[in-house]
Amino acid sequence: MQRAAMHIAAVIIGVVGALDGIVVNTIVSASNRVAQFLGSTADATHGFIGLLVCLVALAAALLAVKLPAVGGIVLILAGIAFFFVVGWWALLASPQLLVAGVLGVLDQLGAGRMLARRETPAATA
Image 1 (cartoon, rainbow, N blue to C red):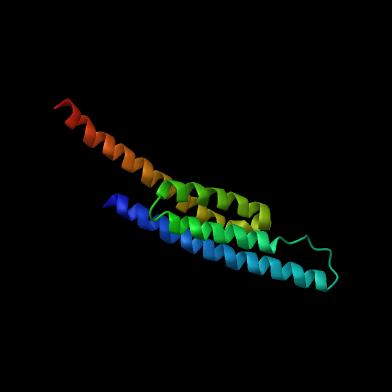
Image 2 (cartoon, helix red, strand yellow):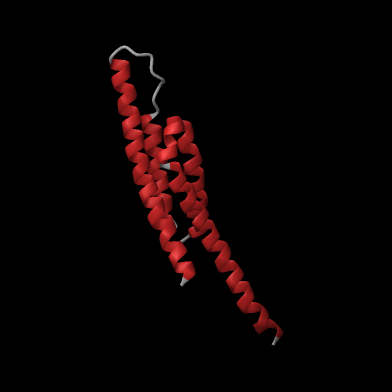
């Protein structure tokens, strides 16, 4: 039961984090474009790359349904990559991706331990 709860939590938190990332990326990209239009020397925006990172995170969250370890690792990588795209604004979305990734990996590690515990007594009997 606890494993199923971690599994579901990883998927839900990952999807919410990916959607939050899309919102943050859109806001940062739009504000940088407006600043450039008004003549400010704003930093270059990476809107398309940010969108790509968020879509990869969304796919990883959905992948965590069947393969929690793989989805978790990709979520962790996407959470770290998002900092390179939007800078400190990533603090609004990356923690969710990182937590979901860790939950996915821990879910898989916990499943492996549970299987090892179940097989050990059967092998000795």
